[in-house]
Length: 351
Image (cartoon, rainbow, N blue to C red; front, side, top):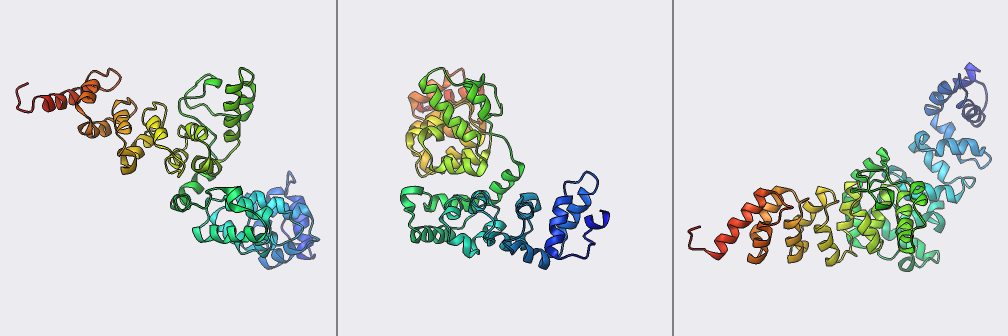
């Protein structure tokens, strides 16, 4: 058996792979078998993995993320024995390297089952979005009806710009966390939000149950999927995801082409968001044209002091006066607002 685990049997490549995959779970020889599989001859492996008669156990072994070898993926993706649904699952969150292999596969490009989730992959370039959309249209899929603004230039550009960060967070596989907690789960700051815990919280009233259902859906998603919802989802979903523990997800909310001025006004006033949310709002010329956003940032105790101090000069006199007596903000900010108010009301000095 030791010889088999080392791949030293006089059998065909296909038979050897089958034996090694079987041994990969062996309590004694499993580690050696996995090492042998990782370095097994690529030409022989590719031929075996392209063969429709190769056992599913072997195909599934090499499709598992930790066992994927880039040079073997074309054989796997074009093998008709690999179910389309398996490839569809891979397609939605595939890395850039795997995405490129998918796009080069004739089988993938001719399958609406695989192309639908692939269109949601954040690792696509704008040109690839267009190419997939055109293929789906030729396959009879109404892309605008099914995907809405998924191909919006703003969305594609944002995903492309943050591709490396998305991949990094996906590798870390962080759980879903909301800043400020969730009322239904005891409002514990930084608690992991699980679909199971949310299910147990249902049954109070219809409105709460509807919100919990949305939270359950989000809790089952990975970072890339939540980014899609942040950019293309509903107002209520954005209101939840702006508090996401992932900086990328909350930033994606602010990049959403569906975002309204009223939502930004609300976000600027929130005390349970990441600091980067308030900084991103303040850096946006578009958002800061709205005076309510400016005023809310200045009065929000969550806003970093260096930021709010710089913004106060843009406040009107009455709002400066109100800020100077706002006990929720730092004393330094109150004093600065009071000095500005005095200068505005008594520009000649003396005071």
